[in-house]
Image (cartoon, rainbow, N blue to C red; front, side, top):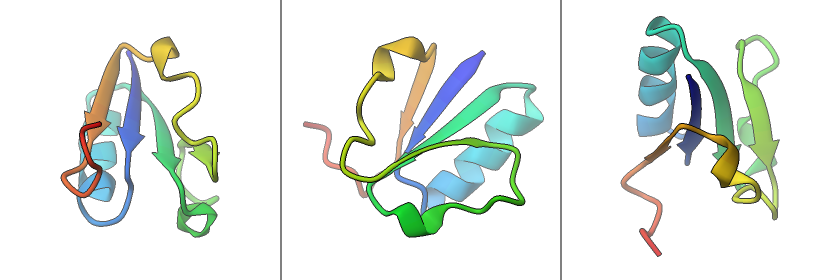
Length: 69
């Protein structure tokens, strides 16, 4: 399953680890390009257009710090 983690700091890190452990393909979506860690097995969608193409995911996990609108 393709999972997008929207917002990565703290809660997003834990969510990404959980879904990766479930065998999912993870893409981290965050406005801050500084969250990228090349040592992690995730895809990264960062910067101003971090919310583009969310329709490609089967599950979108929004962290509490991201406004629902």
